Length: 315
Ligand SMILES: [Zn+2]
Image 1 (cartoon, rainbow, N blue to C red):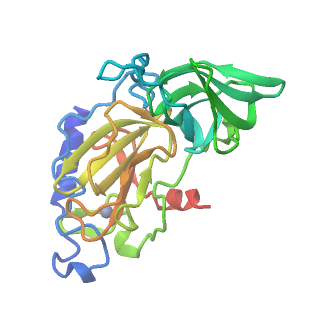
Image 2: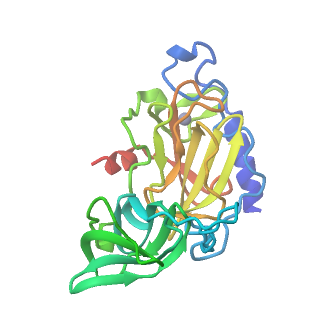
């Protein structure tokens, strides 16, 4: 019943008379295009997955079979190449992609890493051996040992060959992981009154805040959240809805340049990549249309003005 009422209310909002004229987009002072109803067609039965715990993270197992590189197609024996580390990338439990915490999952990238049997970190009292989780020729994934401290990372392959990381890796405490980050990774503008929550739009009221930024600017998750939707809509363009774990709130990102690589159900940390700023759907300039919902998105919840919250993230 509540759901039915929610849709009726939504329909009513969409039918409200237009406050702004549909003409002269360039001079209209806002970035969503004429007739944008945030969404033209919302998914029929939005529901929040009830699963708990992490699913579909980026830490999926990769091929770990790695023993055949010594045999060439011609039948002769080829000496395997020496391992060589080019860079370290933090994948999970990260302060940023270059700042892992103790217990983080990192990717050691480089060449000829498919025969690596051991990854070595520096510890307070000497070297720490960490077993790899997965390995391919181009990358080895490993958990950062709890006792690891700043230092070079080394790998050792089954032939005893070693390689050292080009730089020392700093290891951060878990408390350094940001809880909330600003969703746009680049210069932004909040525009004028027409970009604001509650501004008039042809046929409806603006339900979010438009954040202008160059097309292609990276968009990231504000909080640790679960992906509820990753879809296309003629109004919202490529859009994603994220449910903030441990809260009743949801954030919506619209008009992205292309479909987000995220998978529905996936859990992502604050700062994880969501997509890139675009101008898709009913939009008249590169921008992020950002919505902040309390309660279920489109089905009983309410959008609130996100501007003060967004500004607080920039401090
Ligand atoms: Zn908008």
